[in-house]
Length: 177
Image (cartoon, rainbow, N blue to C red; front, side, top):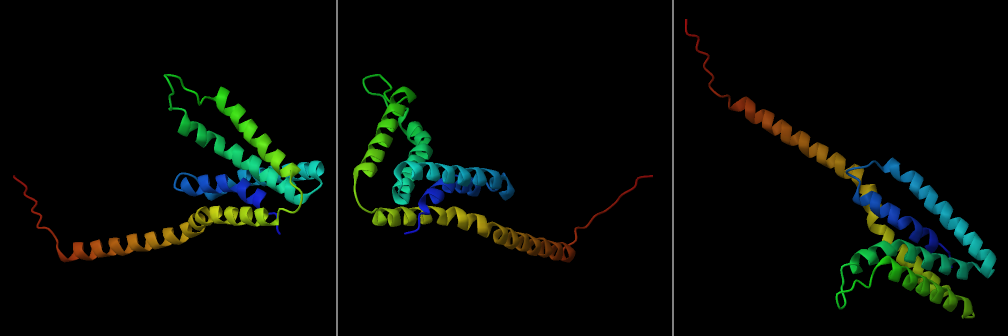
């Protein structure tokens, strides 16, 4: 019954990109995009609430729009190399209208169906939570993995130092006079 899915689907791409690129960037660089995404989703949810006068419908429309927004680039990249009779049908000029039609159809279906969307809300909530499991795990486990890696590196350095003390090479310094 909680309407978390718009926020979950709104922050997932940012957390995913942060988790994938964590060796190159710091976690602090994700605060601003997360804040912008949450504020944007909340504003979209509030504006859709004014239109539909129903929180569940507004949340479902917001989630569908977020899914379409975040998936457009991936679908375009996957389809742009496909040719049909020597033509490239999946370019922006054809894919954007298809995306608009899909969005309008989904909004129309949600708008015209009477009743509650409790089951669909639960499904979207679970899907959003499932999506966030891996990026959050990677972001949380990173400090622990760094400590374990540092401890292993320190042990390896100590072992090398002990081995170096035991086996000293014979070095002769010859001065010809």
